[in-house]
Amino acid sequence: MNTFQDLGLNQDLLQAINDLGFVTPSDVQQKTIPTLLQQETDLVALAQTGTGKTAAFGFPMLQKIDVDSRTTQGLILSPTRELCLQITNEMQLYGKYLKGLNVTAIYGGASITDQASKVKKGAQIIVATPGRMKDMISRRLVDITKIEYCVLDEADEMLNMGFYEDITDILSHTPEDKSTWLFSATMPQEVATIAKKFMHQPVEITVGTKNQGSDQVSHEYYLVNARDRYSALKRLADANPDIFSVVFCRTKRDTQKIAEQLIEDGYNAAALHGDLSQNQRDLVMKSFRNKQIQMLVATDVAARGIDVDDITHVINYQLPDEIETYTHRSGRTGRAGKTGVSMVIISKSEQRKIKSIERIIKKEFIKKDIPNGMEICEVQLMSLANKVHNTEINHEIDGYLDNINELFEDTSKEELIKKFFSVEFTRFFNYYQKAADLNVSGDDRSDRSERGASQGSGNSTRYFINVGKRDGFSWTSLKDFLRECLQMGRDDIFKVDVMDSFSFFNTETSDMPKVLEFFTDFKHEGRFVNVEVSEDKGKQHSRGRSKGKDRGKRKESTGNFFDASKRDKRSDKSSKKDKRKSKSGLERPRRSRR
Ligand code: AMP
Image (cartoon, rainbow, N blue to C red; front, side, top):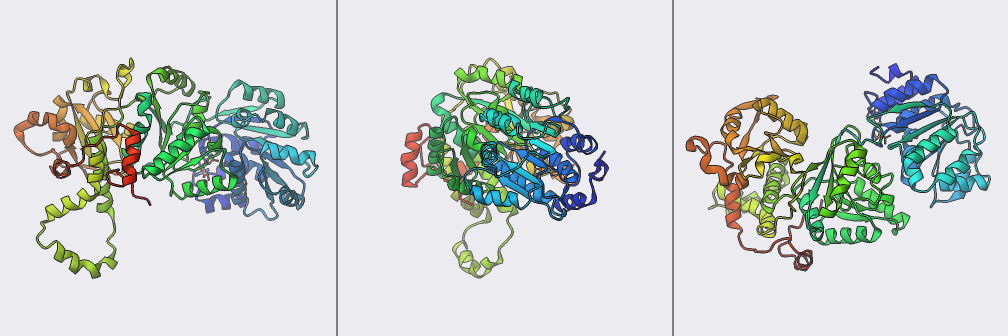
């Protein structure tokens, strides 16, 4: 089954699907929609957010209800106001060609009278959070005694949030013979109990494995001293210039503190936690959606229901108390067919938790190193170079060119390039040139590290390659691509770091001639793929380069930039120092605000 038509949906819905641009039904949609359309059955579906589950229950519900009737026939319970509004919005989009459809959202923090009057107008479907729903039932503002379909969405979250009593109470007001469809990302005992108690021989559908996170997410951990946690966070952000992330902290206080520190240090960050008013939270979410915020620092509770599709990284600044919660955190990335990375910053004492999480997600973590200062400088420089390269010329500038040209009359092209990039680069260089190594050694799992055994001996070479995420590569697919091209084994390519339009990787130095040889005039999908030794790490091996040629060595530009800007001696070791310096506005690598 490959099309929505094949699933048995009617014309009104197909037209809306077409308008939305959905082409192929997702896995969970393929599995649920035909079943729910053909049978009156209970259903338990294990599916993460981002898999298209709203449509998986939404389309069948919309097709089955009678829009000519004003009776409430469908009830969807969801854990948070945000999710409740999102589901309502999606349902309205899916049902836009169903004349007379009324989908009403019921949630706390808004006028109960307004919501009651919308219901009274004849809501065939109610989407509600449990607390407000229970309140409205007790005040007889809603009537759910005739519903035919009840969805428990993100059931594990609802139970985590302590809604068991409310759900039980709400369900007691619904008919025995309704169909109940339960959707959950994980299957802890509490959810299994609910399924057993309220459902009759439910059809079970699993997307992925039980409790397992999305296949689209890779999991990495970084071992640092507890005191270096914040510096490590900043480095991870600086090593990923296009990061769009949620940073999870354990408490509201830490969330606020880290967000404030990040803002002070020039990052586009904001805090999201329960001490903010609903209005403040809405504003933060709006800025995050618009990508004015690149790092949203959040507590687990506040982040529930964040439904933004293109989050690139989830950063676990601290691991959650309940390790089950990790699945929810990492599920915020890798949504809607995109890939994502879930990073964990841990100290030595927390290392055992990684093993427990691996058992839950049924995936292995990759131990990675916090990038060193020069690696970050290189990433930032190349990111800027690519941005400049891809920038469209704004001809409004033409009128000023004479004056600019006059100023640079005696400057060669090479010098001009160096000067131009030094403007931005020097800030990072000054900040990072003496940066300490934040990595803690002594990890018994180094055999599992992506670096492989050989790199520890210092006998490896790092390369730059001019393909990245924009060319459809993730670190795993780039590793596979390189292995295939170079006919190398699983551990022969390591430390693969994929950026937007370029990447880095390592091999043993003895493989360098082979690597450079292969990528001479090599074309992939019509485009030259260029591999060069990355200057920073490659330096130590440059004497060993075959035939003493310069081919394959990255242009000296990086080195010269370094030379040109050796002024500031500070490192990122002390965050107190960071703050003091950042106030002066002198050398912090302040990120440009969008
Ligand atoms: P959900 O898991 O329901 O939160 O859906 C995640 C996102 O995927 C939402 O923005 C949906 O609009 C979108 N979506 C759902 N089904 C499809 C599909 N078949 N093709 C493309 N996008 C989809």
